[in-house]
Amino acid sequence: MEKPRTLIFPDLESLSRATAVVFAQAVKQAVKERGRFLVALSGGETPLMLFSLLGSSPYRDYLPWREIHIFWVDERCVPAGDADSNYGNAWQHWLKHVALPPANLHRIQGELEAGEALETYEKILGSFADQGETWVAFDLVLLGLGNDGHTASLFPGSPAGDEGQALVSVVQPSQGRLAKRISLTPLVINQARQVVFMVSGASKQSALAASRNPDSDPLRWPARRIQPLTGSLLWMVDAAAMGESKEAE
Ligand code: 6PG
Image (cartoon, rainbow, N blue to C red; front, side, top):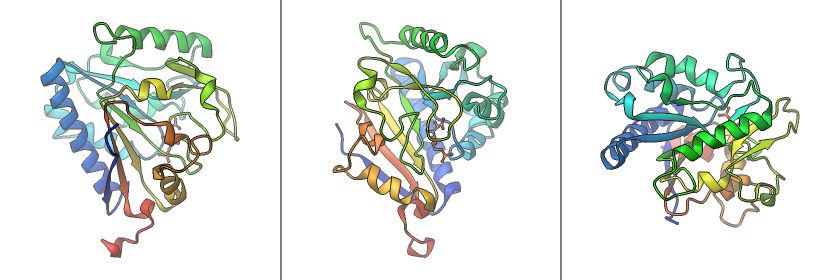
């Protein structure tokens, strides 16, 4: 595994703009090498500014949307129009503004019974595996980090053994979260060519420090389980999350 890199930005806006550049570069490389770009998105608040940038000029106008395929890292088991839907938020902030063919949108169908949603999504993922491969290898996986250290729907205390060889898992409601979730497992995330964490805000300081510390317990800090086998890992963070005041820049 390549050594993780960390890029620190003054604030969420500069972090989002830089991540849009990373996204566009990843698209260019993937389309040049393989004729398509496969990306898996996380939900939450942090990526919303990035989504708005990608849904506006210049990205809206020049990215090769016909070659771009959008997937999700995780989804709450709610209908697409629900305020908690990760797909719904990406649609409103970004995807409805760009000429992405509907067939290139591969959402997790949160309105289905969880087991059915999982099976349906697993089949879609399998259909995108490269020739001779079992698992899909995403060109880019965008992850966030919760204040408690969760990423995707991998929550503190969720033992690694639970998932076995699964690509996708059903996560039961916990710690006050009401909806079941469907989540990619580290097995498939770690197949990605590039994994980017976006982390912003002082509330993430302790989770970020622990998640970047190689000695942290992956049971308590599940982001430690994100270790791309051959791909790269990039932490895109702002000064507040690193615990550095802006003056320190
Ligand atoms: C989800 C997300 C989740 C998110 C973190 C950070 O479905 O909740 O995929 O993993 O990335 O909770 O969320 P914020 O960006 O809102 O802090």
